[in-house]
Amino acid sequence: MAVRELLRMGDDRLLRVAQPVPETLFGSAEMDSLIADLLDTMKDANGAGIAAPQIGVDLRVVIFGGTGVNPRYPDAPEIAFTVLCNPLLEPLDNERSAGWEGCLSVPGLRGEVPRFEHLRYSGRDAAGAGFVRVVDGFHARVVQHEVDHLEGVLYPRRIEDMTKFGFTDVLFPAVVA
Image (cartoon, rainbow, N blue to C red; front, side, top):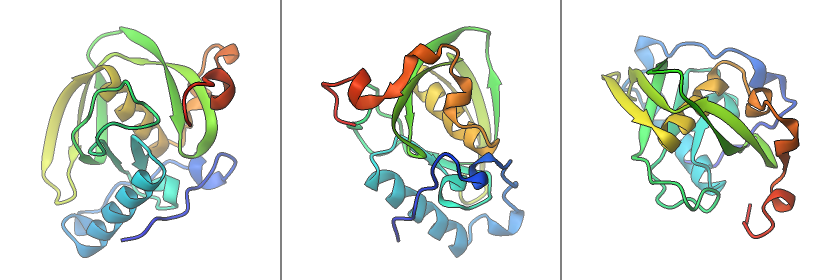
């Protein structure tokens, strides 16, 4: 459909808690259009995922995966394309691991962020069908990062060691941002 403008850190709209997707939106042309715009925008920016608030839509909708090998995360395993509405996250244990993250709303920067390693998430797809998945590793990291957007949290707030936050081209000069 369309590549939309990405809101960037500093825009107050990224700090809001997003609204639940209403029943009337599931399975609608409006939902299909939102998902298409999210996907086009994510692909255009080489994202691993994107949340509706990042394009100025105040709804609890995230998408991720389905883009094959991502140039921003070349060593990460592929994740199946997922539309996740009104998500609930449940860590399966207390194990956390630190990993480097970037964000389409925080361009050019990376930071090392601790995230739960094992996770169960549930929600609804674009048509409104409920589903549950148990995931770990990169998949769990991506889900947590995207759902943070729905809570008005950008990843720099999760960084525990600010010496591990900086410009991608300085931190990883051999990697194309």
